[in-house]
Image (cartoon, one colour):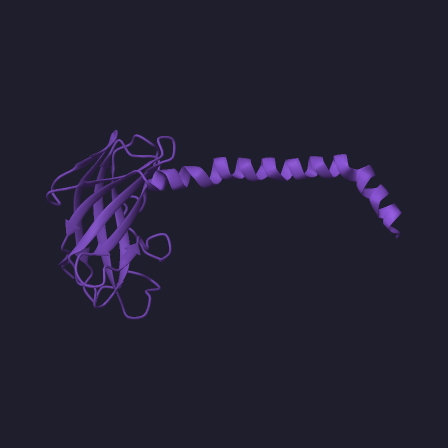
Length: 189
């Protein structure tokens, strides 16, 4: 191809190429506005509500979270069908009124290395008690219920812990956290 033919090709295709370039810029802008900016903006707006004790409840907008309870399973009780090697099982109960659309539970060590764990209930083969769901996602918005969730912790994690109930509101671009300080006891075998 000679330089004259190359020049002619660019002239013939300049409008379609310009349209493709404008489409790419518009798509990138739309992706940024819809998928990138809202999570970044909501990170700046985190509201942490700290309970005075595990017997208290905390208001998260229209929802109320608490009281909470927690216990370690004794080593002679098989809590999970497929437990991770060297782990100990702990469960927590959280009373929820006027449930949010979705929430997650996070457990963080108060002392030491501040390790954080998410609820292991969806991942582990656990026969959860029939009197409560493991996460907010399984319930209808606005219901009252008691969450029962399990954590698989390393044997050196003894507590106390921060139990955070995290509710993300993508409409208001805010993340609300109900924080409880828990010191689990050993359950009766």
